[in-house]
Image 1 (cartoon, rainbow, N blue to C red):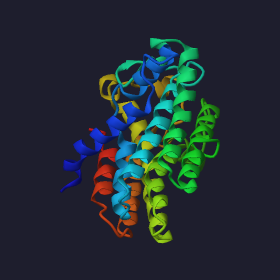
Image 2 (image 1 turned 90 degrees about the vertical axis):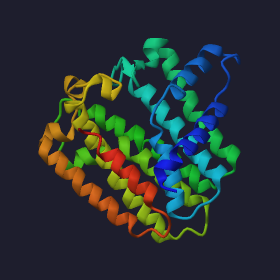
Image 3 (image 1 turned 135 degrees about the vertical axis):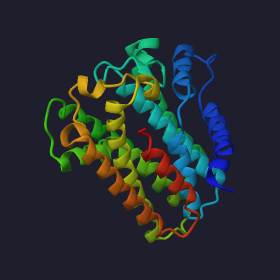
Image 4 (image 1 turned 45 degrees about the horizontal axis):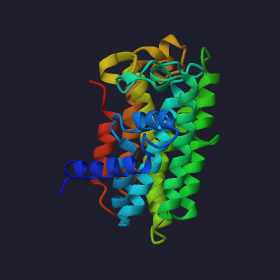
Length: 290
């Protein structure tokens, strides 16, 4: 079966698991639980969960329950990060996935607590599934100061600044790429039989598409519409954000994406299992600009 044909079944399982992982709205404190469910269950492409499932296939990991726990935990951390990124003290966005951001639909304090609670719940999901400690460590590193949080700090520091290419790409690798890399790398830690060579290939693939994904996001902010993005178009330029096309030009940005896509394909060629899912997802992630 081709990977796109598997997606509806995979996503159905992810959605059921996400809903089961979240407290019911009737459970106190109801307002917080309502906002958590609004955040997580209100749409989204679920690209990171799909990456986790595809990565498991690429290295022959067949523990469906554990892979689904990885997929859910990464998505919960991703959703938490969006809520905090949207706050007035960060990016101050009013729309997310075509709907009011949490701090607009409720208030800033609720948004902060939603993010806190979702991050905690992500690690609870992994603990309940009994995954190896190495799996948990990867997610912790991806979410913390050496990953996503650190990248966000760099992003704020780079506002109205002119970072060089290495600095900008390091920020991208942390802010956006770290969690994508976690989704790809965590499944390999579920099976002690996965070789170090396969783990390295997954890491190389994830590094390439994580960096390219953020460059494509920067291009979309210039060329896309609010309807296409689900959030205000052009907000990066308005906020003085350091972006790849803004610093080095649109054509150079597109060329860099092509280079990274080729690198990702080379990494897939080193994997022993079914890599069609990762190849398909790379195309979907990196070709969103019309």
